Image (cartoon, rainbow, N blue to C red; front, side, top):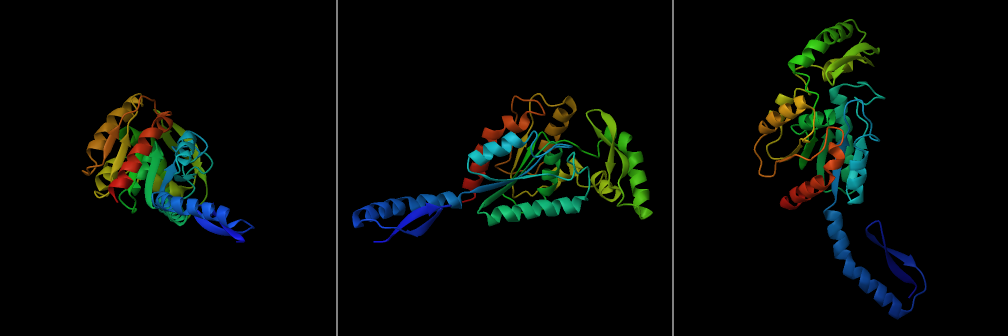
Amino acid sequence: MRVFLVLLDGEIQVIRRVFSGKVFSVVAGLLLLFAPLVAQAQADRIGIVLMHGKHGLPTGLVAALAQGLEKQGYLVANLEMPWSRNRTYDVPVARAEEEVRAAIADLRGKGARKLFLAGHSLGGAFATYLAGRLAVDGTIAIAPGGDVSNRVYRIHVDESLSRARRLVEEGKGAERVELIDYEGGAPYAIHAVPAAYVTWFDPAGALNMNRSTRAANPRSPVLWIVPTNDYPGLLKLSLALYRGLPAHPLTRLYEPEADHRGAPTASIDQIVRWTKGVAAAAE
């Protein structure tokens, strides 16, 4: 016999080589024994689209989470979002949604059978918004924050938002200008694209977290992660927002002993348990 079977990328492949009949029989028997397990593993593959926080990067606070999930066999799309320190609101909300949709499609193409959205801080807020718009098996909001409808937030950014809207009306919406962002109790200057900025900072838009939580798909569960040492304002807001989510038997509140920055890493094990549980319940 001049062929034998090997396992490559989860598939049985035929490779030419000289083997005795006895050796070939043993190899083929082992492969046939393990083939159902491989097929099951492929069927159970979970894909996660991961989104970092404001002015963060995929290599920042979410990097350990992405790596931990990959070590568990997950397919992970760790995206650089429009609010990263490199991009600074370079495209509008609709384009960001397209980027996430493309990442979901890519994960499906790579073999993911169950898909989840996950985001940290502002990424968690956007994941919550998308939970009402995209067909996924579940959403993970890690220390979500960045609610632009907040009264204090409005005090600091409303004037900048009005300026950005005027620039758009004047046909200057594509030219980067200095505008104002707000985080951690203080406003600060950024250079952003006005036409994109107005979509992100619209108090009735995607980052209105009260609206997003109420509009989440009631057929898809949410893992809502509130670290015990999060910023005081976010602690109060996050727990109230969690109570506004649509009822689902698999929606959970998780409170790891961590601060805002450490929440993604502290939540790895719980995210694995929860996603696998949700995936299994869907079978």
